[in-house]
Length: 432
Ligand code: CMC
Image 1: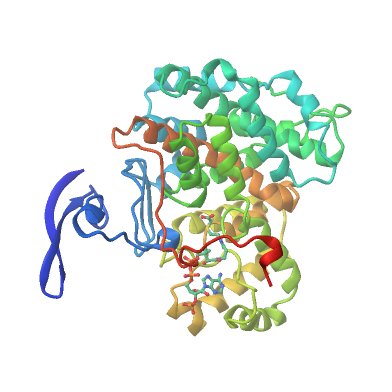
Image 2: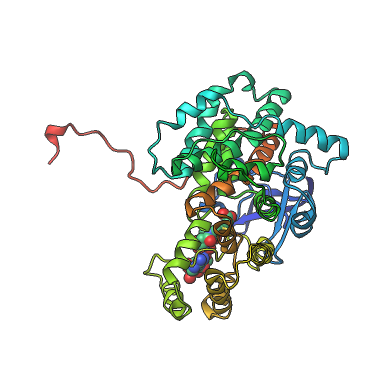
């Protein structure tokens, strides 16, 4: 990041501060307000951080107006079409695509560390069978901090790398176990002969009584879904991971915090909410009724899978997802999927609706992913879990970047206090 220019702040025509303008490699310049309070006595007010860059990062870039998403400079469309999830993981973590030897070594490290401590299996038994798999994943990932304490020194790059590899390698195992537990089937151990996505599907869907056959169509679709969800710069869950990690907390606990943040329906939980919404709308004839609800400020209903804080254009991930959705359904021989037809009709009508046009609300990544996941055989409650498996890569890449940043200090936002002034305590028997 290079110093670019200065901006002056005046109050009543008198200069009170001069701040640096910093220029990134892409995207808008930013005003460096670190000295604002020292120079003026003011803090800034930006609830929900709509205008605040919380960090410097070279991992992911989004141009929300043009609908562009780049991982380390590479367009998401190219990566989804041509790359693999583990190659993306390497790219996000290390900044460059690996050569053959680097890729083999990295894949070996991940694929051979997929098993979790046997004691974690017992830990699962404490959950109710009907627990949401995101609740289980959040708990189990946090619990890993108690199982892998041997490499918890976050200031040692080697120990950070071990934790990073462990998280990427073991999160699919924990996620599949959450699913198996909820359906009352025995856990499957990972199979290190398989690719990342094939292994995940096998751990989810194999049963001891039947021979399991890998289906390439399905693992390819999962691979694409994982790539599309791998990172998305400073979203709520990533910022949560960074904030938790800024105190020097254990990496497994930080990722568990990210999973908690991802769970909400405004974030990763939207893919589950989209499917519930489509099932509720049921029929094309009901679309106008639901769009009316979405437009009504007094109705909490929102059109899930639509809108984004950063994208004010078509989310590039949604385009790939829509195409993948058609491919998967075709390859599975599912003709005329009613949910897909309904989703496409809903998308078309919403995109022509004045309310959505005015607010630049377009389909986001979650609009079509649920339909693919349902066709593969996942229950809706697992949708966000798959998002978490993929996003773990982005979270650990961002967590590592934060720790390596020389400007890194514990995150500590300020506030605009609106409570009572100082007042004296009144004993209970004196209060009216
Ligand atoms: N349905 C109806 N109205 C909407 C929607 C929607 N899905 N999204 C935004 N709006 C309206 C909002 O009410 C506001 O209207 P007004 O200006 O009249 O007050 C305007 O559009 C701007 O929205 P906002 O609330 O300021 O946008 P935000 O940046 O705070 O929220 C969002 C972004 C993604 C939380 C929101 O668009 C939303 O709730 N969408 C549905 C949930 C969803 O699909 N989430 C997945 C996001 S992509 C995956 C991920 O990154 O996790």
